[in-house]
Length: 156
Image (cartoon, rainbow, N blue to C red):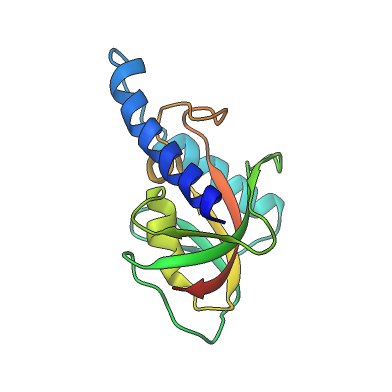
């Protein structure tokens, strides 16, 4: 568990540093319209009904949960599976979950995880601007819509 948190923090740090170094001349692309069309198609193709926040994050709460509700500054333990709208997976936590601070993750998680209560589960559909933006990151192509099955295990 300790190594997972360390790896997550290190990954986020390297991500920030690498954007400054490796992408010095990179001009970010606005994927807003493309991502919106992709998300709406994904929802329609999978017969899903989602809520949309003001920032463009889509979420589906399948189990509301009954415990504490985190804030954007909370530390949480979450079990998750991450995949693209093509349903090809790119990341998954252990069944016991991974613990991290919500200020140490992508903006889509900082905003989305507080929509759940402990014991709650659902789906976050994260457009690129709330994920990794235009930048490729650890095999995730720039501009990618990210889908996460989430289970909020605990607010720590």
